[in-house]
Image (cartoon, rainbow, N blue to C red; front, side, top):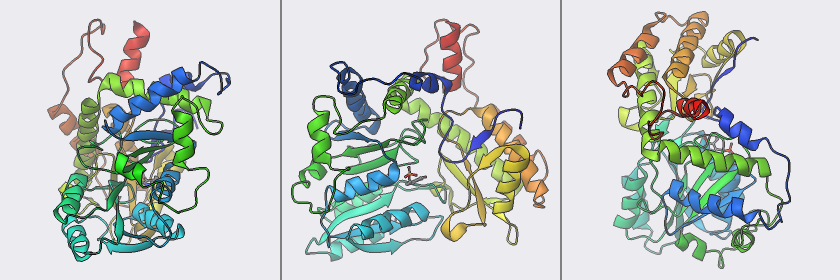
Length: 416
Ligand code: PLP
């Protein structure tokens, strides 16, 4: 099909050309004396992205799923109890991972479309006077339902109960794109992957561990080989890995972190919020609703859009892909067929999103879902018009890169 595929799944996200070029290199010796000059700054810069001064960041040739396993296996023993708040397919798989590692999981189910309930978490921890519960598991941004949970409130709940459980947070679709404060929120394990906010292909698992969490390594009896943080720490100390790392991915990660710092985390969060608000305006314009039950739950990285009763969300996705080369996210688990998801994260700007919204309108119409063509696009345009960012200088000269959308920054950099 001519033209570019419009990739609007909530990960993998678009990889900027700048990152693709950085990854396009000949292989090197990962045991050479120059290799640490690549890896050591990456490991320390990642701490700025995770917003931790006291914690340690790890990079694995893996994905987010591997980081669930690494976080749990390095801190817990078979038979340990953990408390998991579950409100979507990824929370469900996180629980499954914990159970398969031999942990006893107390599951707190919340309605899909809502998120972690700090009051219930506090109640369960207060009831655990023997402090049997060793960890609390939550998903920061539940990609399946487009719901963001308040992680600071979960930390306050744990502290209010004066409970020593570690806080494990899956932020696979939150990190970089949404505010995330590993230290300030007292997160003990921050779990993510490369293919969403970092704008890379899938292939790296990224993990932030607090000192307290790392302190549990010695007593943790879960089996671990590939994901052993002890091996990783020993090799990382001098800038190496215990096994062969993926060089293109590391060069890509270097470029990704540079781009993140150039735009600035605050500016990235503001851009994602603005794009998400535009998408939500479009959904209202169509007369449809989000899976997120209240505005406070709505995610700035993915919108899960309910189709009317009797309609098939999978048909919308299939038509969008086959007829318009537009990739939308599927409904997963409980909500399969009942919604479609629009990912709005990573290397993205208004015009790209407007194109996708126009494509969604066509697919909705073709699937027999009566919406007025243009209604969502116009609502999003109105939002973008009302919140327009300052006009940059014509030639880009002297303009700070910070705050400019990523795609624009690259254009300016090339022009220079
Ligand atoms: N957690 C969340 C919230 C996700 O969105 C995903 C993937 O989309 C995962 C975990 C699993 O990550 P991966 O596919 O990188 O293993």
